[in-house]
Length: 229
Figure 1 (spheres, rainbow, N blue to C red):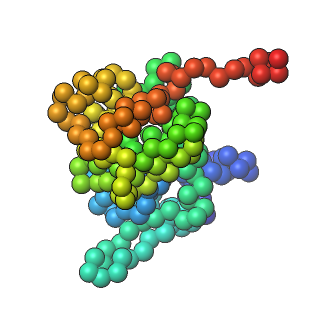
Figure 2 (cartoon, rainbow, N blue to C red):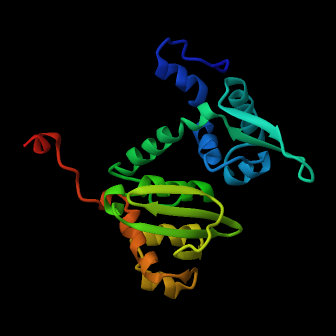
Figure 3 (cartoon, helix red, strand yellow):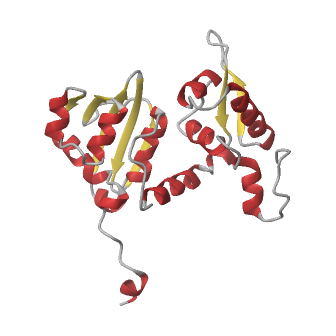
């Protein structure tokens, strides 16, 4: 079901924009990709959106079938919003948009405000070619939140939560992680600053900038004409 404001165009792209193209729409989807959130969690992670606009977008998404709203069981007894199966199919769209933006002549220079968004950016930065044949498992701790990051032979598994016996546990903040992965700080400099703590394999942590390499630092892919020989 499309919102009241519509392009009134039978094109499927126009219909998709009717549903998720309003301001804050795709960012709300982004915030739900790693799991359900309460309204207050969404407000905290999207500080620029007003409560009125957030409520409106969530109502539109529930009506359209992009998200569900459900009550958590006692003793929590609060409502959470979560993506439907159809809503989760927007994930590659969001990652593709992010990857496209990073190839801009003037890409973003600072990390996202949201912790989840910053962690999700690992999917955009992940280089499956560099990760081929490698296995690295670590837990990323940012404030009270924990995320498991598992790389197995070029495949990335990213989710909220911990891991049994990870190669390393990294406790840091968003800006420090962003600076390290974007190679504006070396591992030695990052550790010296005191806001990047590692338990476990330092060698595994040293690999990360090569596995999560910003697009602009990667070797260019061969052109189609070169590939044809």
